[in-house]
Length: 124
Image (cartoon, rainbow, N blue to C red; front, side, top):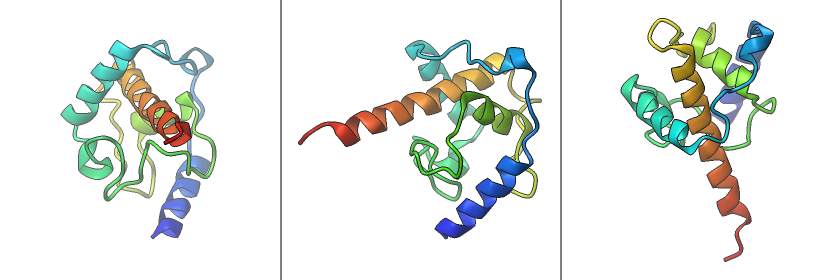
């Protein structure tokens, strides 16, 4: 099953189109209120149905870990949410979400990753 996810991510990443330069930087990076709003949007548009309520993975992959074929960048995640992934069930959300809303979901996912890494390095 892990190999299937890796193959899907490889296919997805190799078909990703580039974003204009102004769209490469998340205007909400590090903004905790944007991360909270991003989680609300993540749930509202139904991302949880594939990725779990906390983006921890279900049918779709875990979006909180570091086990990606390529290190995910904000712009790559934005592009995936915006355009979907050809050949997968990942749909485009560009008609349902504004750019700012997509960036807030990106910040939610990045915040979840930061929290996870912090827990992994905290001594018990």
